[in-house]
Length: 145
Image (cartoon, one colour):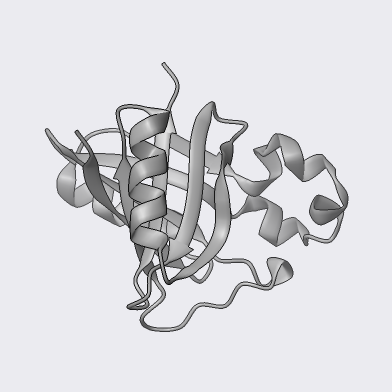
């Protein structure tokens, strides 16, 4: 069965925001990765990042309840990303299998715009992103156990 969690986008202050959220919700970060720590970042894309961008948060996750995880990232202009009200969050779906990921991704993205096709990732996931035909941003992920 799929789970749904909010995924928040920030303009360079993800770390500050998530330290605040952690102070309110308690608990510990399950994941905190900076752009400089991403294996694929050894390519040309990484060389185009400023030292400040390399320190920004690529992904952070904080459990906020028994079935909810608050996640976030810094949006980087170096990657052509911009942050505007309305695109500062996504609905993140976690699935129990690649087949379920395919089904939900293909169904929800119909008539929309795929921004990253489903694919295996460096973190061991099967992940993709899209905007549905109503303009809502979605992320679908299956974590290989």
